[in-house]
Length: 484
Image 1 (cartoon, rainbow, N blue to C red):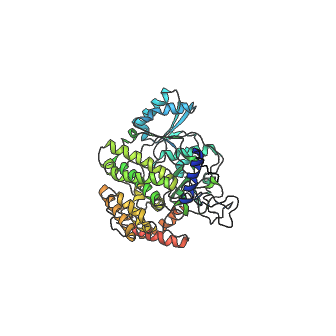
Image 2 (image 1 turned 90 degrees about the vertical axis):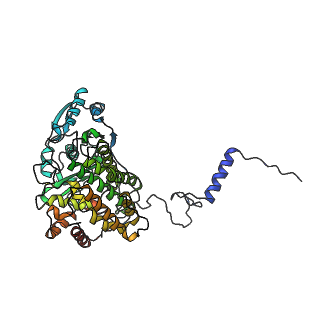
């Protein structure tokens, strides 16, 4: 009998054997690789279940299967405004346009920008006729000029100046969100845009979204496309030091609602239709695992720091709020917002009692954007609660609510009560639409102004798909938001 000889396996062979054992005994969770018996050449009659879509082009009924993250490059730090001249020189700029408003042009930030440009011998032209909450009428003048950068609500104006300078023959409504406009995609690279925020709210320095009042429709709308996002955002806490307390509060409430709405938005995998071309994938895609990280952190920090930033001379809290605005911008700039923002646009646009918010030094009546989104928030999140009780309870927990033992069906009510308490303690906020001058007779006009906001309504959890059903739900929401 010939004795058997055992040959010791090589290191490579041992590794292969180990991997094979793991593959068959502990298959991975990845949907593309979890079938240990798969055969890519012959599926033996089994249904393919990979992550990539298998039908091209996808049908209009197919749900989304992917999400895309896009944000501007961001530089955060006290004093970083002084680097803007070097940034422009590095971009090869010889002459630029500084876009701002008349209030900001008189503040220290303007002198810091001018000094930075002069130091690098970058010539500039100043345009300081933008307005708070820009209107299509004010944009008509600014679009005659080429842009480069600005701050605050100014950033949205600068984005639109950039767009229409690169598309000089395009009708204004070509790129405006459907159905108010044609919703045409932006197919060419725009000029460099450096955004320097001077308020801690919009997060516009991170996003491809620009919002304005469409006066003819008495509502807000905008343009949303990744190509609109600034080249660079210089987020400098020194630039928000001069904000009045009321502006700190209102802009901070915008951050709060950006975070809450993007955290609770319809998941991206439930959005329809799936685009047939990636260029048609909307900027607002639905909640997703990456946006969630930014949105939840922004929510937690806003709850912690906004009361201090708005009521005290607290540079640390104000710096934290500016960072929160940027974090929320990255979150909602890709996940989107929903009902608070969709309902806010006719609130600001109608303003039937010519309301002027205390603490705002502006020449015309104004419901600040942050006020208009927060005033409906208690009603909105009571309504959306059943869509995802766990997320709503986790949001309530961020407000300090002990959610131990709270029933799932109470999630919306619990979050609504937490929001009410936060707004009341913050102070200076209208406790419902009635305090802004609205009554029940305005509800039909408010609903009419909300329905065209398809870009955000499509992400609203718990909202019906049929227009008639949406109309009834929105009417009840506005009625619920009259007071709290």
